Length: 455
Ligand SMILES: NC(=O)c1ccc[n+]([C@@H]2O[C@H](COP(=O)([O-])OP(=O)(O)OC[C@H]3O[C@@H](n4cnc5c(N)ncnc54)[C@H](O)[C@@H]3O)[C@@H](O)[C@H]2O)c1
Image (cartoon, rainbow, N blue to C red; front, side, top):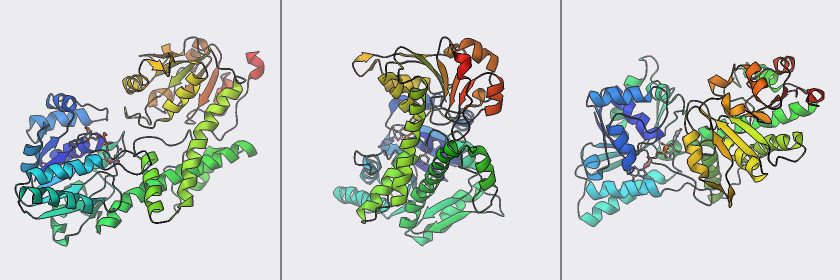
């Protein structure tokens, strides 16, 4: 099949590469010239395990092409995917300017009947707006072709995006024109084993809402566990034990039940806000989701407050090591990452930061620029996780990269000024930390105190 895709971000690029891997011919278009130049040379502009290899092999096989030319992209396929960003607008609603601008361009260059597939996460009603926009642009040119708009939300997870895309647990397709069912069965069947073709067809609105409902449910599980973890801290219970105890119930399931420093990333925070906004526009207050968002903010605050109280309210001039900047392991994405809040909190109080992340340092460097408000910016980045510890008052683990899970604790202890670890991801064992002589602050578990040893 011939496919065009607008947007080569985390979703558009992975989708394009995976369609090409299945033998389709895919033209990917982005307005970012730098990204497209890199991709044409076979280099990935983002970090995603396994992505670079697939870009290279599919470019070589001439099944995958990259361009900034809108006209070529519109004309080269009858199936056009929209996978551009839908960031939060100032009021929390989803900003559709990129999606609608692509729709306008499609109408401007359309040369035959087209099927336009919206892969971006968009509020209910957007697919119809896309169709309206294309029809309007066609009318202005005085041309008329059949335009079908389809909703096909994406459920991949950064860090395992290639696997999620090549072996999805389900594909959701929202259709107006039921005659298109066969086309999408043909497109997606190769991604499933014959006995489990989990391709769900539904109406446009249900499909658009499914994506938000999925992310809202996952965010709810995280906030629920974070709230339980706060109670664990009060009653001397262990959130890990509670997680195992409830997660083994098939009605609950074990995934997305981890307490920590709160959810971040490019999807959950903005999608929760957008769903709240959609609900509000129908006079529904969605109290549950409001609480989910509030708990998430509180959880980050709770974590940083603990650091502040351990250092008796005075962080000025102290150095803190941060391990992990990406919003989760396996990606370089820092959108709404907890690390940004932790760093800002510490800098605001006059602290200095020594940071390490295997993939995301360059993005955090760009995010903070050269100054912190009008002050000098005290962040140093290290290529080695242990070198980042030298002379620091404590280690703060914010992202659970694999190389942090079983570190050389003796080296950590020797290199830090004081053996203190704040663990926002619960990756260490409290008893082991005690035995190794660390003052250890996990989430929802007993704190290991060695205050006497610190003098
Ligand atoms: N990142 C995820 O894990 C994920 C998962 C599922 C769904 N989604 C959704 O998918 C959509 C895309 O997310 P993303 O993370 O890939 O975004 P992204 O910001 O990584 O990429 C968006 C890309 O679109 C490009 N773009 C903007 N306007 C364009 C235009 N007119 N023509 C061509 N390209 C244009 C940008 O330059 C950018 O490269 C969003 O709606 C998001 O909510 C994201």
